[in-house]
Amino acid sequence: FYVFILIMKICSFEGNEMEIKTADANDAKEIAKINVATWKVAYKDLLPEAYLAQRTADDKRVEGVRASIGSGVGIWIKAVDNGKIIGYLAGGEARDENFGFEHEVYAVYVLHQYWGKGAGRALFDAFKKKIKGKGFYLYALRGNKQALKFYNKLGGIENSAFDKKITNKDGLMLDEVFIGFN
Image 1 (cartoon, one colour):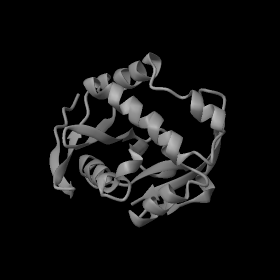
Image 2 (image 1 turned 135 degrees about the vertical axis):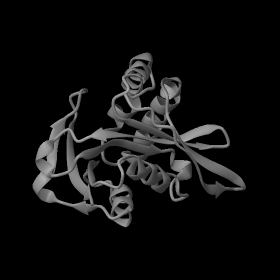
Image 3 (image 1 turned 180 degrees about the horizontal axis):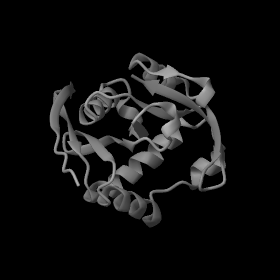
Image 4 (image 1 turned 60 degrees about the horizontal axis):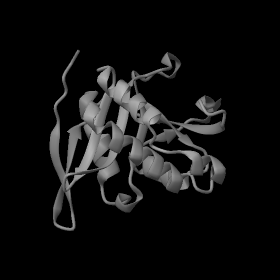
C-alpha cells in the first residue's frame, strides 16, 4: 500500500486559502453529504425529482465511503476551505482496460457555492500529479452542460464510441458520456 500525502495551498476564497489534501476514513460523513448535496443541484433537471429527494447521507452511504477510503485502494482527495471540506475526487485504476487509459476518475463533486472558484481544477491537478500525468477518463451524465463544459476546459475530449447507459444500484437508468484526458 502506498501512502499518499498531499497538502497544497491552491487559491483564495474571500481571503481564505483552499487546501487540497488526501482524504481519510474520518472524512466519510462530510464526503457523503457533499455527494448528496451536489447531486441535488447538479442533476436537478436531469434526474427524477423524487429520486433526488430520497438521496441522503445515511449511515449506509457514509459506511460505503468509509470502507472505500479505508480499503487503501484508489485515490481520495479533498478540497478544504477554512477547515471545511468543500469537495472531493475519488479515482484510481481504470475499471475498463479497453479504453487505453490506466486511470479513471470515479467521482468528483464540489459544493455548488464553490463552483467556478478553482476547487474542481485543483482536485484534478492533484489527481494528475498523483498518477504522474498519465491519461485518465471519466463518465459524466449526459445533459450536464456545466460539467461537460468544465471537463472540456480541462482538456477532456468526448468519445461517443465509449458512451454507455447503465442502471445504477438504485435501479435508475443513467446515460453517460465518456471523456478522456491525455
